[in-house]
Image (cartoon, rainbow, N blue to C red; front, side):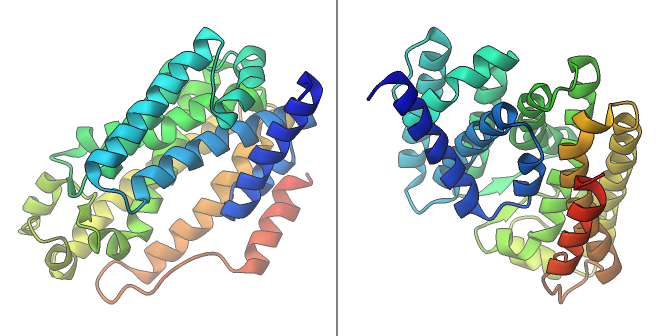
Length: 284
């Protein structure tokens, strides 16, 4: 293929990944200029690729091997000779927006945590380290693509990344427990008298609502912090992040209103609420 043809094919590839994923971030990316949108599609496609490895059906050693291979591929990307199509789609974004290799590697490190057969975090610092890898690092990759200066972009990535990932954790409690994943810190559970060995039993314990409330309070504080930072960023540059935040804020509010004691019916914004978020924040 010629260079231009190859670039067009890679652009179609990463856009197809985004479309197939059904991600709530899609409309946040759609409001970007074509160059920035293509860059975000490539970043998202990378994140989707390694996330699918972590969540897939391979054995833990096989997942580790594939994630190691991706870490090597990221090193090749920054040396100028990647081989994987998604990594090749990242060549231009890395050059245009100064994306950092350590943030790509942090995402892979977070996927290594998720790929384990059993997951527990000893304490809040360990949980927040996980959030930094799987969410805040993605924010640090996204902010320069949005056009946000790093002096505001990095703090925003931390606040919003933690808010979004903690919301994910509260939303997916039961689904994660089925795979022996318990993201609530062990010491937090212990303060409520909850043993952490059996994930399903922990989520059925009478103290689980109080434990979840502590995580919800932390998430709420991070949403507040993120809003304050976004208010200091230009309307055009902050628009994608605002769309993403508002979609998650809607889910978070529904989770808190529902509560965390069992049973915990699934929670998500309605189609009309999602449309209203896009109309209110995407077209402003």
